[in-house]
Length: 348
Image 1: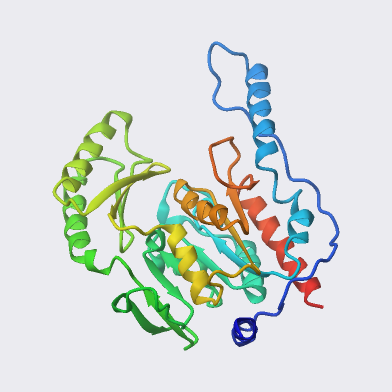
Image 2: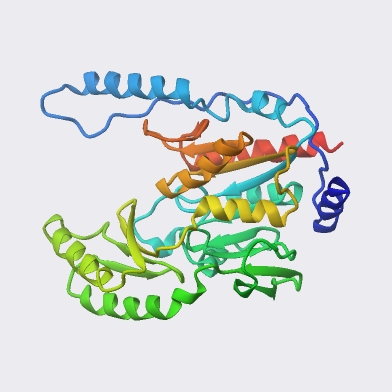
């Protein structure tokens, strides 16, 4: 019965490939260029730094092999499985940029994500506000989860195991019915108050940028002088101390204020799988690609489920629960293009 419902869902959403079947696709070159050296230490010559960095990265790749060079092996495991794709945005679909308002994805990346979304259910899970991510991506065949998964626009089916007061019906740009799930909705009044205070108190710090991400607040310090960082942190910490229902997290050159609820990107992944009809399913293959520390929560979910492929985007060795790796957004693009080609062939 569940399989019939899942087949119906795929057909209704217009996904072209039902069950993925193993197909051999032409190999593409291994995208494993060695990482260039980090800034030189005075005590070590440049060539020695190159060797040290390369050795560490090569060793790390043994534990987290390239998803490009491992592609055929990975897809062999997809035989008889329903593929579902999850993607982070910043640093994954777009490069990390100095101005967060200009984190545009390329037309080629948009095309690749669109091609994948025609074949498999696809969701973008970002720390940005959901509306902001949609403004960057501009694809209607994709599900969106903003604010680290605290603002989800997903399938129309409502999940009975989640509080109904946080789920509401909505229409996408094409008029299709979807469900909006916002488990942190009760925190919005406090978030708005903190946002107003932060914008005022940080205005005196050159380079500080406060970003409204709907259910969390991001304080960017990429352009803040080193001598001003301490002051900025004190201001943020002093504010959060007045709101015990919130806590601080850190990302790449950003401090984030988030509601203290048990909800993260991993929970968003589980919610989307359930509303897609894959609750406790053994025949689903989730693929999650992300570069940030917050993506580790989603990697952990896949590890605990014992299914799917968590893929870290990084050109440097780092601690991660991911099974595979891609160096940067350009390799993400190559992987998505290859996944789309594989899906087209397997649907024949």
